[in-house]
Length: 615
Image 1 (cartoon, one colour):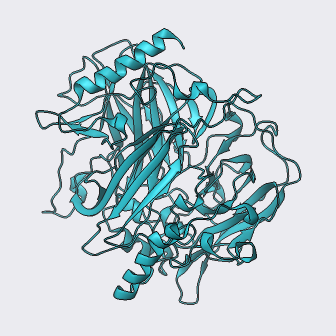
Image 2 (cartoon, rainbow, N blue to C red; image 1 turned 120 degrees about the vertical axis):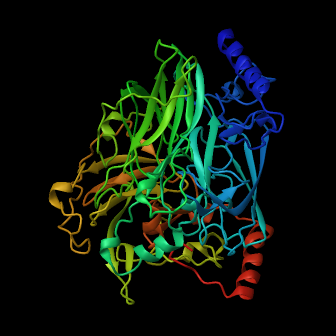
């Protein structure tokens, strides 16, 4: 271990400890820390930076003792440490962008507390559902975690658990089986869009040294209407409501709405605070970008700075430089940014959400911003930098630019599933989203994972892959909307994706989305090297386009594959893959009953019915 790195790690730990307000508990014991803290003067301040790994008693990275594979990668370490967290979900009234609205918080925070762990640690989170006024069920999904040892902890209602009933609790326990950056969120209806989300930071090997880890940069669109109202609207009969346009956007839960857009007399804070990131001159900073929004694609940039991408989702990649990082809902990117030489400088960090039928977007005239402030900058004035990047992309970065650090060749002779996504009208005249002409409606009381004869379960939305050792998903998007598709339980390979944009083929924003032109389809060729294709867990399937994914079936379970646009998942755009059913680990009876028994009792007492296909 390089002694300079060891000294740096100890310096970071000592700095955090010295700067910690007395009211906060040290994060190294696994207790949740907010993204923003309150100092002794009552001011809200950001955590300055994060360690290289957890554990101030260690001067060697925990994963350095794990087993090396022949390709240079390491087996998941087993350090024998459990990081414990306790989350209480409540309904509160806050104004993240200056406009007050009812929303959810976790431990009174939005975004929720940061989960930190080392690669290989066990993570244990007890979730208390204290939502009232009115009561609602909930659950929690750990986005991108593979759940190899614990498929029942995945958090998908109707698949791996029953909902957590109001007034009840459930403890999730799983291994940090991947490292990098992600987030957790509610997996009931579109509930997470109203505040039930927070970052996860799992420390592991890095292919590049950096000086300062500035932690999560959580990007999201933001709506002033309640999520239940939006769901009712987008699953109605008026296609002019598609897509719903967000009111503003947030970075780390903060933004500034243009109060002039509101009716006179509506309470609004014209000086709502932006999030602040403290840069150091001539230092190399790591930022962990996360799109945890509902619909909007984020085009992220820092004025006059270049970013070096080192990870996509949970996959370390060979570094490449860019001035804009585009993220669909559920996607993440870890980037390195070199600090400028002027310690008095400040700049805007900003994210643009392209609008129109294909990309959603937002109505706010104010840019989505946060402040980048150097150590000697005047913090009494806002940055005055001007953006030179105006990319309106509504697509993934070209897949040929993404090359994983650890090669994984494409397997031969996979089982291929051809999947076509459509928008349709059901028997009641309401919009529904379909995969192969079927809409998934979650059975909240009977999770698929708990079925007695899982190998015999089959429906229009459940696909049993049997004993196939590799599965290819050939996805055709026959709708004029982009769909960021997310696969639970796997980091899939992306073999082809296109076209980049269909705007020229379907330009009118008020055109009928039920009658689009024919989509482009995959021609059977691969757009990337088959010896090391890109890997990730979420990929944007272009409007009227296609994408081809493949994964090795080395994780038996029942795994959802769904659009991560909240309103599309609410409309049923989801399937479930039963992978190697004979080998799926079985949950204990206590685990099954921990959510299903209280749920059945609460449901019987309240006659509560689902509000959409996802809950």
